[in-house]
Amino acid sequence: MSWVILVVSGILEAVWATALGKSEGFTKLWPSIVFGVSLVASMGGLAWAMRDISTGTAYAVWVGIGASLTVAYAMLTGAEPFSIVRLLLILGLVGCVIGLKLVGHE
Image (tube, rainbow, N blue to C red; front, side):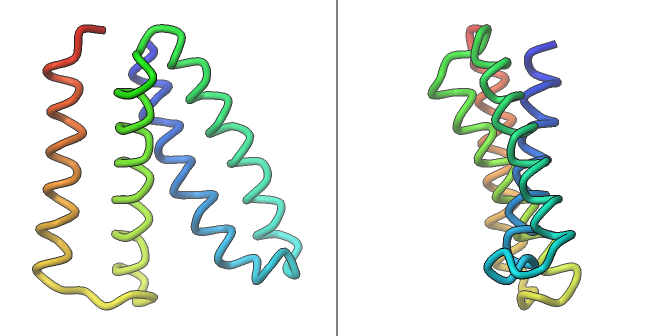
């Protein structure tokens, strides 16, 4: 269950990172609210998962999921340019996250 919570928390990291950008320095209400709610939920889930998963592994997986989804979303929406190299780098990051799960001792 800790891994499920960790993955959901990583997804929420992408939500709050995207909402933070859309909040324009907290001047837009709804993106600011989405940021705050998803930040608290993401951090809470990370903390909960770290009861069973080592800090280094949990944090690396959380950041990897959040970063890869944030960049993928930005490329899909046109906020950032798409390139094959970027896609391959994201896939490499996802592969590393999966590798941490496969070799972990948790």
